[in-house]
Length: 172
Image (tube, rainbow, N blue to C red):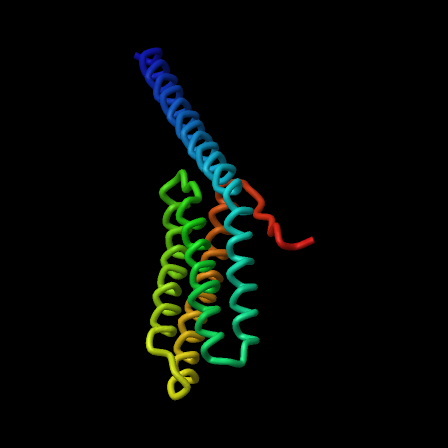
């Protein structure tokens, strides 16, 4: 009877140890999958960054224009198309995991809302409403800024859980 108890106890320890090893292996597999998703995602960052830079430059240039007509033309012909290009680049980035898709989706949604805000800003723009409309546009872009901060925070946390160091490619 004593040997049977020792055998059962040994068997229970073996099963428990195997479960722990399997859990560790599953966790490592999940981390490896997340790391692959991060590598694939990172490959899309330079193209998206380029589109964002082009949008920002076009908007800065448009803001230097004094004539409302020329400003409107710059917004319609350069700024909004560059913003659309940026949103398209964001949407085309591979998000190979559910968590990455959620994090990335929030920044895509905020820039998609910005496209709407820019379009509304231009629609019916005249000397009488330019100031109030521009304030509304800046308010919409403040929301984008807040979404970007949350995106970077969430991305850093996600990368840390996945044992990947997030490096800002824009810093020297």
